[in-house]
Image 1 (cartoon, rainbow, N blue to C red):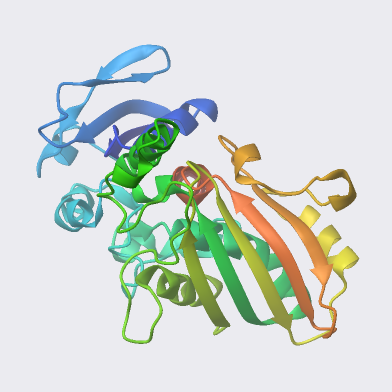
Image 2: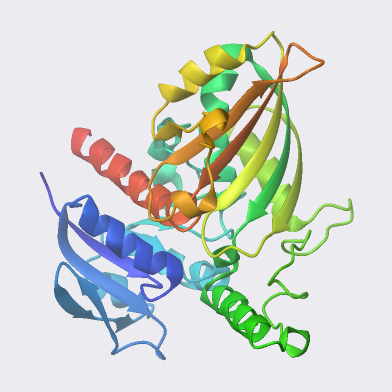
Length: 343
């Protein structure tokens, strides 16, 4: 098998670090790894396969200089907007973790378990977009059920970890908890979030839109339609909770036909990269604390609605830095490699 020159843009960020870890875990066909970051971080090192690799400065010419074939971007939308075109011009395929390209016409938005066929569209723009973290784990569970019962509507409430807002957000939660145990939480600063996050939940992620929904909530609506190639009525309420890693979602699904919880459980158990944890009598159900560092999406609390035969309820949890970002990006790269090898 051919080996590839791979750049990781934002290699020292929370998602970038996870990408490096996953590339090691799966033994990705690497010829050369090139970690990239801003000039502030250039010269520092990242550990990869037992070796320290120097982070290089992200420049307009680096992709040509290093003969990059796959560029994994996770350094923020403005960085992707500026530098992704240079990677494409150099002949690399860009797999972008930011929101910048997701809803651009012609750029595929991919969850490999749901719409792997869209990866073949990358040649039109040179870019493949990675969806929002909360969208990825949700559509992984939606796809097999839609195939079986014809999904009409989704109502979802999310419980999203602080890591979804980056390293500094996690640090803010930790600092506030330390202040709490030092009996000074009332004076604790909050800079990343607009409210105290410790011992609290914030029913706002991103800015509010004119329709009363937040930008994060509308991402779930619009991205689901693009990924599943289907207009699905979807209403989301996205909430930030005081956990470090692992997004949880409470889903209510409405189908065109009657649905049976036991049958749905069996369907999901056969779906790729989904693990069923659904024995409530044994207190076995998905939780953020049990999904950290895992590459699977966990589904439980699967039950029929008490009043409608075509409604189903469930609870879905995944590590947002992995499944919701790094793992999905690397899986896209794996699929791209396979397609590239077969063409």
